[in-house]
Image (cartoon, rainbow, N blue to C red):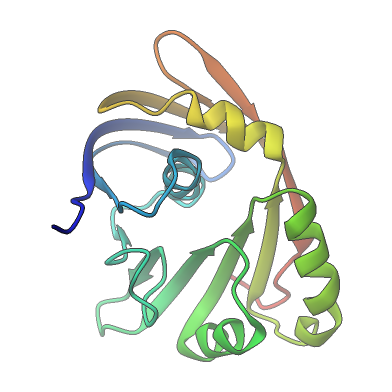
Length: 184
């Protein structure tokens, strides 16, 4: 018998003072049986960091030709491709060829640092690629917010990020490893 995805209901309030974006998003998030709570919460964090009415989750962990999150324009062209983890060089190049902007969120601590060290020089010329590292302590704290029903507030101001539920707040530690040079 196949394992079923866990379903999470999420009310996410985003107050992004840097982009002047303020909205509430009601979402149903499926956690694939092979997906950890840490990864699911990093997906929610990535949504909050790039929140937009047109931003959508991809079909899931087992779908290779789709990102974790994406935004398409009215013609169906991919405006933003968001991927989590440590994809290989070929996957990153393919994403950069398909989308106007690509953001990778690496979150596994020392493993992510080794991964990026091996790829940084090879990907330096990709002008639409941004790579962001998320501190392992942050990922562990985010997992503490995971619940079947979540009421989360994301606050972004002056490059600082907080994700909170009614009981606790997590200050998110991000490190930009590579910034896209193509205008957004």
